Amino acid sequence: MPTPTHAIYNRPLDTPTPPGFEEIVLGMGCYWGVERLFWQQPGVFLTEVGFAGGTVQNPTYKQVCGGNTGHAEVVRVVYDPSRISTEQILKLFWENHDPTQGNRQGNDIGDQYRSVIFTTNDSQAAAAETTKIDYGNRLAVEGYGRITTQIAPLDHFWRAPEELHQQYLHKVPDGYCALRGTGVQASSASALHDAATGGIDGNPEPSPSSTGGSSVVAGGAA
View 1 (tube, helix red, strand yellow):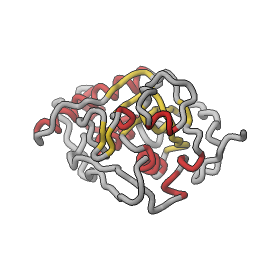
View 2 (cartoon, rainbow, N blue to C red; view 1 turned 120 degrees about the vertical axis):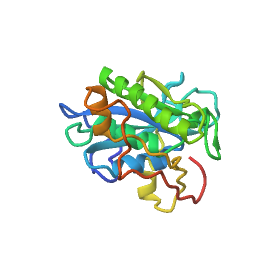
View 3 (cartoon, rainbow, N blue to C red; view 1 turned 45 degrees about the vertical axis):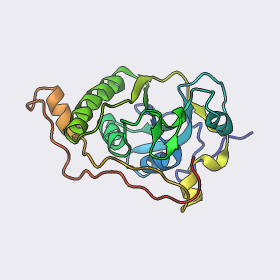
């Protein structure tokens, strides 16, 4: 079976990652809205939906929905760090879902909807841990519980075999999107960098352009 072509970027989903580019795999609940969030970002080269973090090889969406695979719904994001930094990617991650909900996002319940960051290098792992601490502090001030996001090295990404699910909200513009943030702003990427290098007092300010996530709901859940 030929590899699907990305509906927006018009390149095969198995296109090799260009030299100097990075990939990270993120789970924020139903993967349809998450993928759209990231394909809209300048500096992102490729996105695709799939599964990671479980024990079953080549799972189908139906199997994952059954709750016995251990997989989360995730999006693989390939990006040019000279145009969009890992910290900027993670800022979008934290602000556009609720990372305190455990095995759910809103009305989507089950371990497939858990919050996860699967990293592919040490610098991503460090950025994930740093931003988790920073955003956890900001959430606590607003009365939220502790962050439940799993951070781990990527073991394997399994592309979702259902081709309609790839870039679903481009193909079905009014389709289901459960993406919704807490409204709590994350620190800007530059502020986090300054704090890590001693440029400021270690209490980064949120970006003035930050906003919480949003949701457009229609149809059934992914």
